[in-house]
Image (cartoon, rainbow, N blue to C red; front, side, top):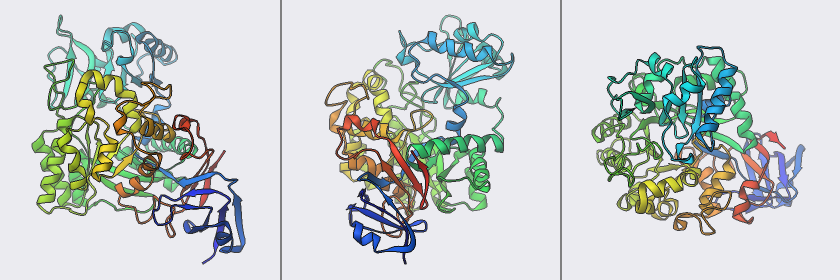
Length: 530
């Protein structure tokens, strides 16, 4: 076989231990034909083939974001953006500006607020929103997505009053003086509002996905593992039907749809190189910032609170076992140390029962682990699907709420040393989609401004650049069960790669966020060139 394209004069990092470095890469159709020296690869070029001079640039396998909400990311670009807003006053100003251009009675939606950045760090209230949006129902999700902020009109439409009981796995915050709802809804309590919203149409979902794909290419992303349901799957199918699905997508099945998936015979891995099913997405607990991550011991600043168990230990064992017997891996959201332990217990029960032993179960986030539980992921072949940028966003809050327990927080080094596989992502739109920011966080444990200092936060958990890149490439491929066809630039694998503006392996790690993606190739075709 001859190559139709040779990329030469480069610094190719294959992520394949058998041949980790090369000058050039030969591509035949949508596959890597070979890697090696310039002369070796040019010798494979067909008479009518093309060559591209990499001018010494660094090439790595294309990146995969192993945990995000891709349709929601696209839709969020049209909502009120409250990310990194430094004060309640500024947040309210943005809501007021959107209200001024929105017809009365229509919903105002947005996300990204973080009260821990505001003076006093208190949760906002419905009265705050009422003052700037009295004629609109408004609902704004916290940056973590595990708490929402509603105004009075939204609460009224949702039927939430002082007498409304907390739903299972959720909490309606009340003013201790009046007993009235404050407007803060946590975990499943948000469903009381969500049920008022219509799902996006197929066209709306597809349009949001197309916008997201264009942005993803600019960041070197060739694949995503999206944690969404039917509207997203319909949208991706429409984009594919339109001939515009230039992104490899792993879809998950929400727990609510598990029975239907089993009835029609869906199993992990069904699909093809563009769109396939990963597993069933479950929730074990909430999140750090909302004080709903489920902990073995109370929060340091709230002695009576151990968080919220969105699912009980018994429920996790039942559902994870049921899915495993049907050939579906479990992708379980777990942040608190108790939630992580209970998920591991549930997976261990399926392994001991011999159920779905081939399945690649995952814990999504894996943010804090008791030291006794760190070795269990490797022992049980459970992938740690983690988002490095979370650690840098959360470090001050984690120290405040978890204290000394943070020795097991965002424990990338400990997990790798134990033999566990890491698969990295962004959790976008919760955090930035930019892969370089994620790699920087994993390697330095510092924010871009240098805080908390030269050694980083909990520096013993830093990992190397090669290990971080691996988690966005080969680790992601292993997590989706696709390591035989993607994740490394090895002969026979899909020709998905990224050309970087600087050598990510030798540059000062603090400068990694400055690296630009110069080109992104998917399936042997350049889908982005700067």
